[in-house]
Image (cartoon, rainbow, N blue to C red):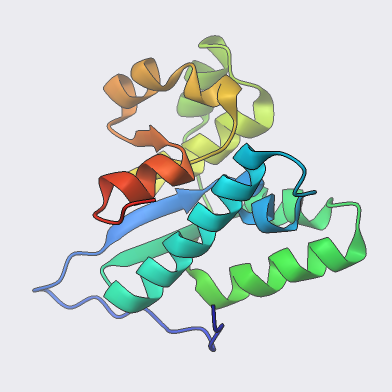
Length: 166
């Protein structure tokens, strides 16, 4: 995949962008140790998502303060810098606020603090998709989807659902 400079999203009244939020674990997937087939497949699906976003221009990737914070905490300098670079190229919008009641509800539903924050940011900016490789979040997706009208999905499922065979 060729990485080009970041494109600024311009939304005109005739074009509605589909907003997607990628969890930190998705951004990291291509840089994780490629020792399991699942990690390899999810990393490849993530790269296909980026290609799709670039080629089709109907998607907007949104970021958040918690995403930035988690990336700053990535232990390996090379991995951290690689993730930051890709995020800088593909994130078109940054969500800076969230609903405290949404975070509280998500934590009550069993999500960890940071997971609840990621989802609250995505919900706040009306993302259609929350893409994650976290099984803990995925196990709660039916309740999350029903209450917040956001689709919780794995990167492979996203590619399969949106017209590209994996």
